Image (cartoon, rainbow, N blue to C red):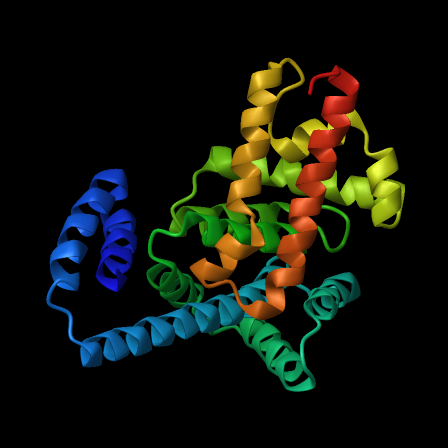
Length: 268
């Protein structure tokens, strides 16, 4: 069974659905002759890789956030506050907070190697686009720390998106969703307030659909985003446990947007 799982995962990451089928077949052949000691070794290898993904994500998140804060020439108090807010939302341990602050400072350094950090994250995440997307969403949110996205920050974010395999259209979609989420939080306050008071404009932007979209398109967008941001799926992909609370909040935001449009449109 383990061989099938490993083969399917590696196959899918390497070649999509076709790769998954090939991986399943090869994994089945592997299972038939897999000794117990080999299972233990494979489990250790997978666990080690999982930790490497979590580590790469954690380091990239805070160092790139620091680099982005410096993009317009100076680091504002709001940007520092946002970084600390992200740490607070993650409920980091004291040691992890100190490390995150150090990484943030490292990202501000003139000799910071952005390309190397992004490539390490890209290699570790392999084909897990949902994991990379969470990273990009965090960085876009960081760009709005002082209330607006400066031209230099926008240019840097586009470079980060491109390096990680995301295009300009995906940047615009994520950017619009982040702006809607921030607007909703400012307008509604706490979680309960957001549930009651989200505007339809924000709901459409969060789901990434136009106001003229059909009910079927709204439902499809909701299912896709829910799947991409499901905490269990992200945890399996390598999202650090410190960031699971943020993933849960994101799924709540998506659910709230969907419920708002369902109420407005009157579909079930």
